[in-house]
Length: 90
View: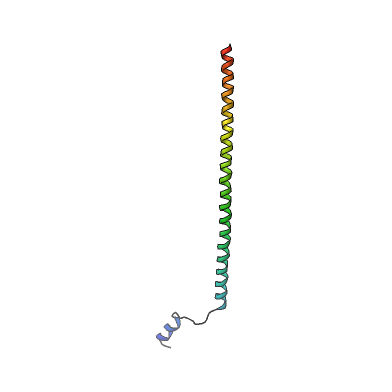
């Protein structure tokens, strides 16, 4: 055996056959990626819905707090007026 034959044996070569294991692995990986992407899409949709609901809840809460603050401010003014009237009478 000469040096040329040894180099041919060690060099890269391309086989025209496909191993069934590679095909199955590729199919399973592709299917897994599709399932992952589908589940991710569902998760994003759920988060978008929750965010929209949270915005609505925040808006309602802010409105209620504003109303409560107005009522407290009115009560404070009435109390101050009563105290001023009592102080003026003395």
